[in-house]
Length: 451
Image 1 (cartoon, helix red, strand yellow):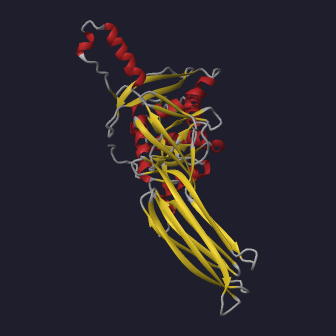
Image 2 (cartoon, rainbow, N blue to C red):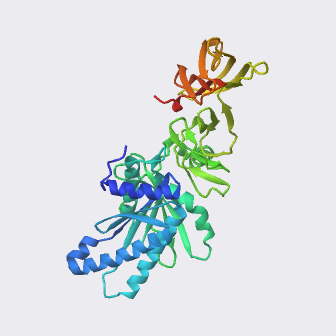
Image 3 (cartoon, rainbow, N blue to C red):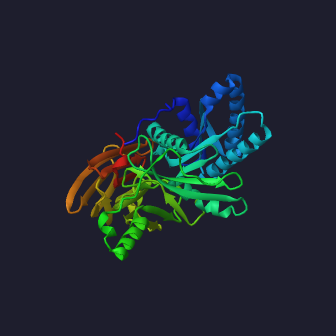
């Protein structure tokens, strides 16, 4: 469990974040956090006027680097700290490097001023659920970015694994920029139960990577018996731990449609969609999972996946499922078209709340017979009959008499729910206008049922 966010994001902050996220069409953001090392000490030693001037230069460098070209967004200033967001991890890392480069240039050009030392931390995570930005999710990731930044020294850029892994391809492509990166290990951050992997990215012209000076590194624990002469077995186990300690899930050639994981949360992917694969930042536990794409009230795409420890690459093999639906329309013409009827069998899977597949079968029948009213020839009478059976059990059956003025444009559309459960609901819909009538028996997913 993480500690509460000390930054106290307000409604304006959340609105700015949500607007940026919607414009970028993403539910995952990179949080960048900066501060000036020793700013309080500088204020005490050089005076408030000098400190304010230094802070002004800091803000100019940081804000320009973040927001130029619409790359990122500065959400708020907290004293000498800046919180910003980015949609692309590679862009966030690039702008963080730019901040350090421009800071070094400023220090070189202003030897009379106190040395400006900026610390930067980056973390990435999902901030929206069902296309709604969630304050608690944003606060959680801001808190992590702030904790990561707190490990850094002046001139350093620290990032969590999710940011580094997403920007790794971009970093490798920057062959002419003298960039370097290094994993410093797993560190315990205040308020977090699990240790976090800390990576560093540097411009080698400015500095070399350096491990956190004050952080608590989580030491690797290897049982004592591994050292009792079982060298080969120990080596194999160590390799296995290193190889499989992290579960990674990549989606190859995945489309832009909203995908729901285990009927609970949207699938969040990072990386450019045009690339071969994207990393999932939505957490996946080891075991069975269900992927779902809603197309309409009666149509979905499903895919069952097994997640194993280590690397998982999922290619789209979606099964399109149609809920049972049978409808007929009668356009009455005396002597030529006075009756319609149909019977059809459907097979389809349903998934309960535990993601268990239930293979189902439905048998539907409908019929409509029309005739002019015996006492009033200008009034049409339609005799509608229907029956629905699912998995051998009767859902319902009925005969309905509908009346419609034959010469007046008077549409009547009715929908009656006849059965529902946690997965789907059944309904009967009737429609009449002049000499025409429609009868529909259908099932639809329960999420689409309106109260």
